[in-house]
Length: 47
Image 1 (cartoon, rainbow, N blue to C red):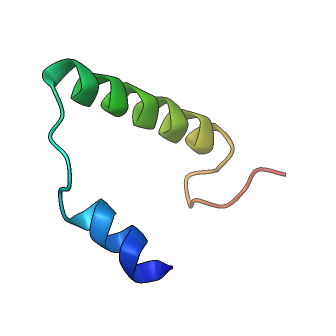
Image 2 (image 1 turned 90 degrees about the vertical axis):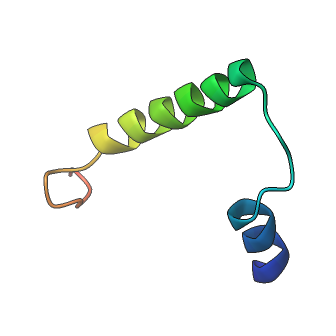
């Protein structure tokens, strides 16, 4: 499981248009913002 997932993630298998790349970046940004709201400055979960 690790190698096929890592290889597809770390080595580009596809080309994205500018719009697709921007969409992916915005989705990841949203995820990171949500995760960061649940953590303190040390990365520990808020109680």
